[in-house]
Image (tube, rainbow, N blue to C red; front, side):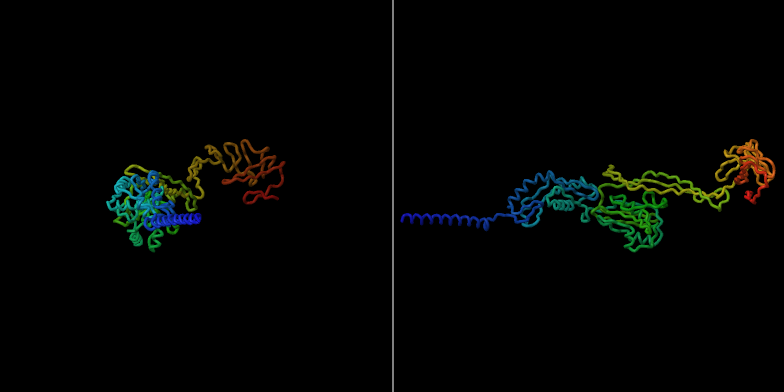
Length: 495
C-alpha cells in the first residue's frame, strides 16, 4: 500500500515538473516571439557583397563594425571629372551601420549607407579640378553622388561626376580661324547644319555620315576639306580622339600646314573623331568675312591642350627626262616642279602651365612635284671646224674615228686611212679600191692588186661606211678567178 502511494506521488511530481518547465519555456518563447522578438535575416540576404542569411541583426552589425577601419585603409574612391582623375580621401568617410541593417530586407541585395563630409568634398574638388567652379548646391549634389557610389562597399569604386546633369557653367574650350574659299550654297548649307551640333557623350562623329543623314550633297570635296580642317583643329585642342584623318597630295592653299583634314567622298576618305567624355559639347562653325571660324563649348577641361607643328622639312624634286618626236632641237620644260614638305603634328598637354605630356598625332608628308624636261628622240650632232662632234642634248664632245675621244685623229673617208694606221676606209667594195695601211694590222698577208684580187689567209679588208660598220672578210689561199658580184648595198652575192 505504501509503495502504491509512493509511486503515485512520484509520478505526480514528475508530471508537474515537466508541465512547469514546458509552460515556462513556451512562455519564454512566446515572450521572445510576440513581445520581445529577435531580429534575424532570412535566406539569400546580402549586404554589399557579404552574405548575412539567417544571421541576427546585432550579429551582422558586429560583423561589419570590425571591417570598417580596414576598409578605410584599403578602399579607393576614384573620381573622374572630364579629362582628369583623382582619389577621393576616405579618412573621414563613415558607414552608418545602424541605418544599414535597419534598411536591409531579407532575401534581397542590400546596400551600405555611407556619410561623407561636404567640406571634404569641397576641398577635394578645389584641389583636383580647379578649372571648374562648384557652387554649394553642386558640392552637396556631388557628395550625395559619391555616397551613392560607395553603396556596395567594394575595395575600388570608380565614378564620373562630369555628366550633363552637372550645373557647372559651360565655356568655350577651343577655337580656330583661317581664310576660306567657301562660295557655293551647298557649303553654306553644310555650315548651317553643323552650327550648333551637339556632340553626344562617348559618341563618334563622321562628317560624311553626317552629310548623308542631312542629305547635303551639293558641296564639293574641296569645300568640305576646308570645313573638316576647321573642325579638326578645334577638336585637336581637346582630349578628343582622332579616329580617321587624311591629307591631300598637294600643300593646301588656304589651310595652314598641319591642320588639313581632306575629304574625298568617291574614295570614302572621311574625317572621324570620338568624344571620350561623359558630357556633351556644342560645335559652332561659320564664316565671318574672309575667315572660317569654329569653336566648341562644354564643361571646362582640367588640362590645357596646344597643337604643336614641327619644323617643316623641304623635300627636293627629282629631274625626269622624257623624249619626244615633237621636239627637234634642245629641250623643253613640261613641268617646272615644286618642293615637297614633311612635318610632324603633336598635341601638348599642360597641367596648370606645366608640361604633362606630348602626344604624337601625325606626320604630314606632301610629296614634291618632279621637274620634267622633254628632249628629242635622236640627238642632233654639231660638227665644228676642228672635227669634234658636240651633242647639244648632253654637251658631250667626241672625235670621229677615235674610241677615246682624243683630238687629232681624223678620217679620210675616200681612202680609209688615218693617223694611227687603222684601216677604216672602203675596202674591196667596187673592185677598184685598195686597202692602204701604214701597218696593215689584223691580217697575215697583204691585200693588193686590182679587180679585188685578194691573197693571203687573213682579213682582206674592212668596209666602213659613214654611219655604220660593214665587214667583208675573205679567207683562203688566194682566189684569182672572176670578180665577185655585189648587190646595191655592197654585199657579195654568193655564186
